[in-house]
Length: 307
Image 1 (spheres, one colour):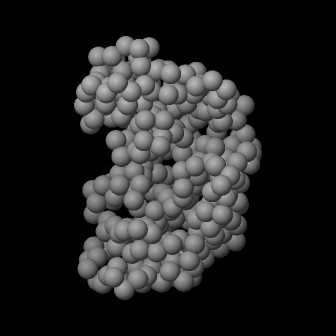
Image 2 (cartoon, rainbow, N blue to C red; image 1 turned 45 degrees about the vertical axis):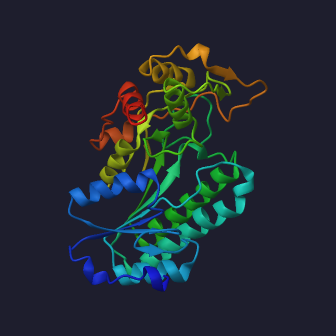
Image 3 (cartoon, rainbow, N blue to C red; image 1 turned 180 degrees about the vertical axis):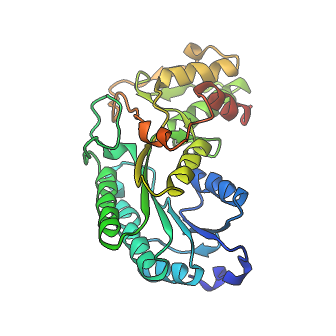
């Protein structure tokens, strides 16, 4: 930890504490709200801001944080949201090494902590049918390979040391906090700018691609459900409902009172990573979780924040 971000752990006076690695993203934001509602002190960790500033790939940093905080919960969202090969070293350190660092430090200094590790829909073999926990893994990208490696490390710690670590395989989830690098938010922001007078065109690839549209707040509610029971340690987190990119475009542009066909340019020779990515969330539903936001309400919520 750096001197300028060192904090007095005694200031976190509530009996239960939770660490969030990679706290700056949308998942960390909504999780913190849930934790505060449950009167759990939240300690945010990232490379750029938060209560502690440092890299999850640095074992000494991770060990010092966990040893000093003695948390009851640890959540790890630290990772780049990209499958590009160019991010291979980042994925190796943040996902692979970061997972080992957290699990080993927790084994030594927080053996009773419950640990959540973010997994991804992108690490499964995708044949266009609903994916569940029994679907085989498939390393179709360096990102998927790192996620798969992290799962096997977690299973080793769970089996060998009886560690309570949980993995939620997160399917697509969005919120107004998403950056425009993500296509759903790109569509929202472009439609909003056009509604305000912009003459730009929205350039998209294959709009027949189907995926899930889940609110990040619902996703972290599922995570909270998962870590607060002791029977299920890995679960697919999704709605089980898929819609096309075109469905999202139509919905967002209609909210802005626009005809989407007047403002879209379809890029030729675009090859999507998949044609359909949808979950079978039977296991997480069985724990009592259900998403609250629908496809339409998510579009309205995100558009309303821009218009």
